[in-house]
Image (cartoon, rainbow, N blue to C red; front, top):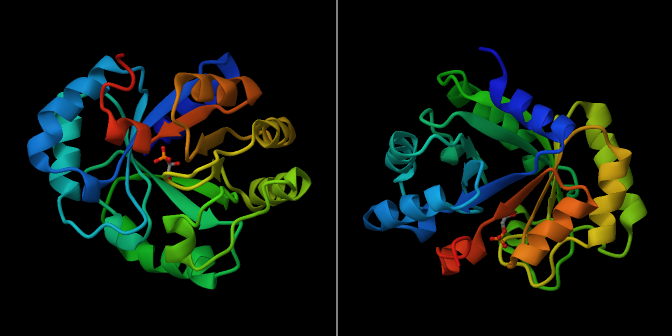
Length: 239
Ligand code: 1GP
C-alpha cells in the first residue's frame, strides 16, 4: 500500500501547513457522546484524529473508529499505549518507540508482539520516536511505562535523543509532556529539536490554549496534539 498518510504529513511540513490532531481516548468517551463530539471535531481546524491512551480498558475502539470514518473525512491514526489498542478500522498507526525510556518492553517487546496483529490489517505503519519530557507531575505514560521522562532543562540531550531516533529510521518525532501535563514541552526545546532533525515533529501534552498551539507551531512543531482541552470542553475550538 502506498504510504499516503505519512506522505501527507511530510508534504504539509514542506509547504509550511501546520497540522492539528484531536486525541480521543476511548476510555474517556461513550458512544452516546459521539454524535456531538463528531460535530465539534468537524467544526474544529483538526486535520487528524488520533485514537489511543496509556491504558484502554473499554472495547469500543473498532466501533468508535468506524463511526469516525463514516462521519468525517479526517484520517484516523492509532496512537496506542500497547498492542491491544490496534484496530484494523483505522488508517494508520504511530508505531512508537519510547526513546526517552530504558524499558525494553517499550523499546522492542510490544513492537514484536504487535506484528501478528498488524499483519492482519492494512494500517499504514509510521515509525515514531516518542520522547517523554518532564512536565511537573507524574503522567500516565510514566506510570504505565515505568520510565523516567527527560529533563525539561536539558534541551541538548533531547535533541540528541531525537537525532538518534532519526538515525535509527524513525519517520516522526513526538515530543510528549504527557496527557494532562501541568507544563507543556518548553518552546525552546521544540525549536531546537525541529531545527536539528529533518523529519516532522509532533508536540503534545498539556497544551490548553490557542496561544499554546500557535507558540508550538511558531517554534517549529509540524503537528500539535490536543487531548484534554477538547475532552474537558468540546467547544474549545469553536469558542
Ligand atoms: C497526550 O499529547 C497528548 O499523549 C495530548 O495531551 O491530553 O494534555 O492534550 P493532552
